[in-house]
Every structure is written in C-alpha cells, then in structure tokens.
Length: 106
Image (cartoon, rainbow, N blue to C red; front, side):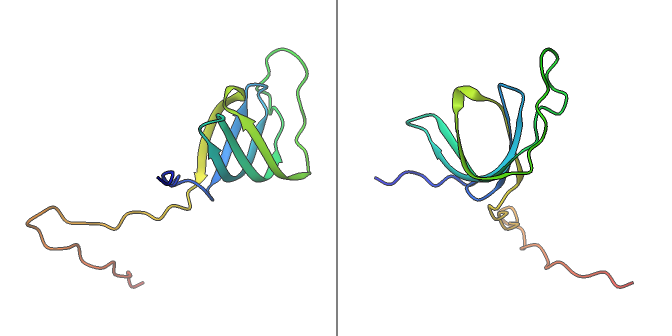
C-alpha cells in the first residue's frame, strides 16, 4: 500500500525551532515513522529577537541544501506559499456551474 501524498511537498515553509531560530525552505519530505521534517534550500534568519534570555543568533547568508528537523525540535511551522493547486470552484447540486472569470475593463 502506497503512503498518501503530502499536499504541501514543494511548498515554501517557515519553521521556528525550539531554540527560537527561524528557518525558511522548501518542504522536501515528512517522515512520520521517524517524526522528522526535511527542508531543502534552507535559509536561517536567526532568533529575530524571540529569545528573551540569552544570546541572540544572527541571520546567516548561507543557503543549506537540506536540513532535517526532528519533530520534537520544532516550535512552529507555517506554509508560506503552497504549491498544491486550489480546488476548482464547484456549484452546489442543482445549481449551474459558476461563470468563467471575466477581466474588468479599465
């Protein structure tokens, strides 16, 4: 039996680690068995003032090819730009289909 496809694979992701460091990258894979999330083409934006105690981490200009995050190390994860196609607009049963989008004339 094939594993279900993850609709956000290929989407731009913002991830904040428990160390308060923000990363942005493209979602490469999610491994539920190992509780990991892998991002590719990843940039680190540092702590951006999130740490209340201790040293702040500066952003890095380096782009990492891949970073694998353990689920236990992730504080927050957000989809910034989804590559999943939007579902087509459908009319409720018994109604005609919606009209095609028309461009407004200026």
